[in-house]
Length: 466
Ligand code: FAD
Ligand code: NAI
Image 1: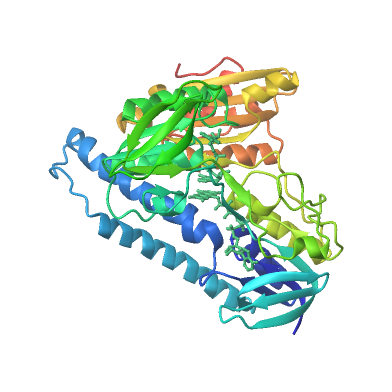
Image 2 (image 1 turned 30 degrees about the vertical axis):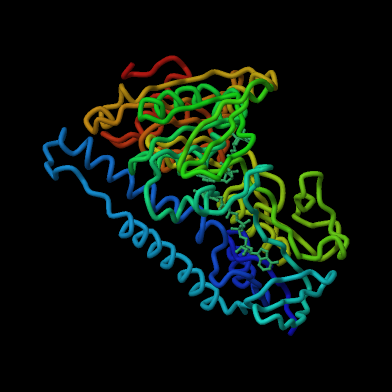
């Protein structure tokens, strides 16, 4: 069999790349080792976690917000089995959707583990151990990432779990100890707290959400604490004793010192993800990796071996589905002779908790460090009419604009629906917009988006409702 392009991996990077390549007339095939398409994101990442976040948010709202709005439904009862079924159905709908799209675009699909045998050759090893070799002009590696393990703490996905186990627990743990105050720890920690678990988060650094704007992170931590989550910052889990009925974690100060024992029913290890290149034959094929095990690529996603490209979580950059997708489109367009490009300055990032946290562009910390002069405009949701009437007033919008040109450099939102609202900021930034442009754009009333307009006005110190 001979192709123009073979994509290894069908996560959001791989399947989107294959579809774009097929649209542009390239004879395309994908190789996937999992029984279903869609990768981490659709099977054990974005989609199932958002299903549980949605359901658990409504569960909590039914208990706490409904009575205040005059809706009497009594104390909501949790049917965890049914909630998991709801999540699984959502996943099935999505992965089947990808299978449909691949077929619709006449992309050949190979089930099995792909191995690069060198430029132009991919071996596929099926579950039955049989191998076949495919020929192709170009190869795109889109094999994604895997859970980072914690030394001395063995994940069994029952009592000591990764994000994958946290999406399938069959009962609500009495106490959940989360290791890592990153995106996974806070999202999945929120799910289980809402469903009744006591949640404690141990974080190595002295702050949550490294990389996020530090003012946003501080305020968000206070909100999570008000919801009942507790934090132990500047600490790490050294070991977990699994011998008793309850787990006993040894928690040490990050800087060293005496350990304390923290008991828990379940420990969630959420300390990051690592690029996945196992059994891919990269070393033998001469494909260079960087010091963190990521595939090295140039600005056109080309690896050190001509004809072999890589995208998504397996290369440098934020491990986000939409970043992988945009790289997939860009490399397909490059292979078809077009000018594919990803603007890494405008990649939004969202944490789907309540309230949500969303950001795009530079943080205030980054601007300070780079010595870039900026004006900040801030607007709290307590002053937004829609947020007030909905009783959803926690958080704020912050817009950072270049002091000389007024060009928007970064937007940070803690608040209800922040994940949808950040799109407006991304569009403005992609067009090179100024805070003034956002401030002069008519925003519908009453909407939460008016807080963005007001923050833009606040950049020039002329917010109306504050
Ligand atoms: P992946 O989605 O990891 O796909 C790689 C695919 O390659 C897999 O299907 C794998 O089976 C296959 N593969 C690997 N090796 C081989 C081989 N040798 N042969 C054949 N197939 C192979 N990101 C967001 O943007 N928003 C979110 O809300 C979000 N939520 C997340 C929640 C969780 C719990 C997790 C774990 C991640 C989340 N992410 C989220 C991150 C997101 O899932 C990843 O950034 C994204 O999936 C990366 O896409 P990818 O295509 O690079 O790789
Ligand atoms: P992360 O990188 O977001 O956070 C890991 C946290 O663990 C960091 O705060 C880090 O300082 C801490 N840590 C590291 N080692 C530690 C140790 N030994 N003890 C205590 N703390 C330690 O990684 P996370 O949450 O595992 O997520 C992985 C990736 O998945 C992220 O890069 C994220 O981009 C992606 N993701 C995205 C989501 C979204 O977009 N909403 C949702 C979930 C995951």
